[in-house]
Length: 379
Image 1 (cartoon, one colour):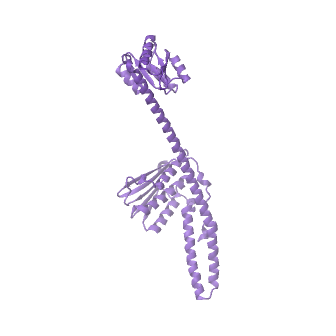
Image 2 (cartoon, one colour):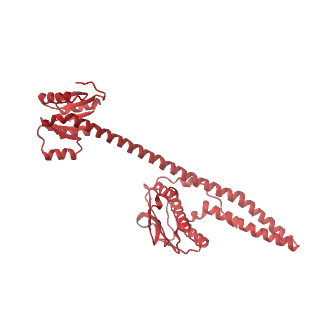
């Protein structure tokens, strides 16, 4: 059956054991001038066989059928993976059965004495189905986009760490070596100089050189601190001490043990989280005290950086340029963890949690990053 129309022809699979009722459906669709093709089946096997062809847009099904119901047909259709809209068309479907049908996902139901509404029900079911499919496709594309963005963020973080390691090594090998050689030469000149003006200039140059050596060492430590080789606790304590010297704010570090053994990738994420937390405190918090808690109890590494500053507004984390915390969240997710930020007018807490299980942490690619050499000749 087909009618001329600007709309595409709707291909309908009709599950019905009564030829009279099938004829009534065909007549109702003809009167509505719905462009359609109607195929009749009366058994579950026939229904499933026709669905497998992929030639239909919608299923109309009677509720009372020999040996099964329209809901049984719906369940079997879903088992095959069919996502066609499914409309129950019955002469006598009770309210309870109708509610159950809608609850189980049937598109709609219609009583046979309301056949004049059949084309409207079909068109509405098709529109809802198309909307649902479009949403599912959009959700899938969004999930794929998020996955690709997460992979990009992971790649960028790995690249940044590698670049930091390379720069730190170059500072150590090139700049540090050159400054150390200049220091030796100046010391040699100072030991042999007899003129007071010459000695004064040598001493001034030595002071500037020592400042440059200290700055180079500090920059290299921030880029890729070798103290990480001594463990996470030592690295966080060094970070806290450096912060205290630089800002004058007291920092209390509490730890569950003197040495916390975690994979290198997790260690680096925790270190960068503490570093970012302290940086934010120095820039924005207006705090007078900082606490750092580090624990590996109950199989979870927990790092909490807390201050007693002014806190952050509710929109602070959604600012267009709040990439620091967003980057930390990506880092945490990379090792199977998560990052929480709790803020109030009395202070802010930055909390990193990472389950210490073998299957929670993907790889330890950070081991491939080259560490700078020992800095003993920098002093």
